[in-house]
Image: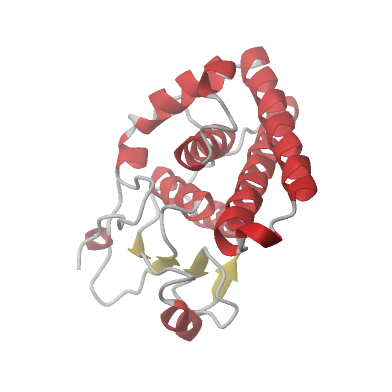
Length: 225
C-alpha cells in the first residue's frame, strides 16, 4: 500500500475524513489503496465530534475528502472519480469494456442502494424515539433493502466478482463493503444464509490487505506521520 512516507515531507497529501463504520468512507479508503494514492485518514464522527467535523467541512458530510489544494469533495462516487483521474496507467478500478463497465455500474448501483436503505433503517431505529418510529416506512425501506440484495446476489451469481488485490474492481469493492456493513448492523433483517454468493465474496474480500488495513469500525487507517 502507498503511505504518506512515499511522498516528500513537504508535499501535502489528501485527507479522508470520516469513520470506517461508514460504508462510504470505507469504500474510499479501500479504493485509494488499490489505486496507489497516498492519503491520511482522520476518524472524525459526524455525531460525537460534530463541531470538529464542521471546522473541516461546514456541511458535515462523511466522507469528506480534503484534496492537496484544500478543495473539499463530498460523496464517495465523486471522490473516486477524482481519484481515478490521479491514478497511474492501468490502475483504474473500472472495467474498460462497455459490457463489463455496464455490469460494474449495475452492481455498484445496487450495492449503494443497499447501503442507503441500511442507513435509513439504522437512523430510524437509533435517532428517532420508539414511539415516533413509523412502521410502514420501516417496512417499505426493508423491502427495498432486501430487493437490492436479492438483485445483487443474482448479478454476482451470473457474473462472479474477482477478489485478488490485482483483480478486484470497484463493483467488487462496493459490493463487499456494503455487504459487510449490513451484516455488522442489520444481520437479523438480511440473513447471510439467504445470500451465499455475497457472503462468500465478502469473506474473501475481507482477507485482502487493503480491506484489513481499513477495517469496519471506529479505527483509523494506518499512515506515517
